[in-house]
Amino acid sequence: IVVLCVLYVAQGIPFGFLTVTLAAALAAEGLSVGQIGRIFALGTIPWAFKWIWGPFVDRFGSARFGRRRPWILAAQTGMLLTLLGMWFIPDPTSQLALLGGLVVAHNVFSSLQDVCVDALAVDLLPPQDRGKASGLMYGSKYFGTAIGGAGLTLLIDALGGGLSTAFAGMIALIVLISLLP
Image (tube, rainbow, N blue to C red; front, side, top):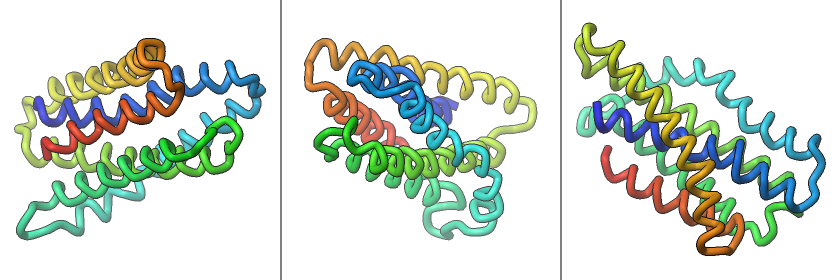
């Protein structure tokens, strides 16, 4: 349950970043509500289609590594690569199309991880523990959201560096979380 919860923290961190830290940074740079809203809208689209992942996650796995672990690691790798891409944008506020594309890609991988972790929970947990685990996992996602919003904003305030610092912080956290699976 601890591993499942920590993986849910990994999903919450970018959501908190998107809805709090990035929104504040874009607003501080003078972007319009419409421009900021488009980034949010792009970030939510993959979640509407996460049901597509289910058949693939259920059908394909690895005899050596298990049915879920390769998918979780692939999702974590995709999340890391998209965050690295965001980190290397010199001025994210002036390259909104690139930032938006990376936000979409990141959320594709994050939604994949969500499906995989849920499937892993169903595989591992007895039916009587699934409700409690589901509540803990969802609460962990809220904790991750707080880290991504308040935590990364405080990190920027403490260290400076703007969005680059936030991206570096998210990358470090996702790398640490990736060590679990």
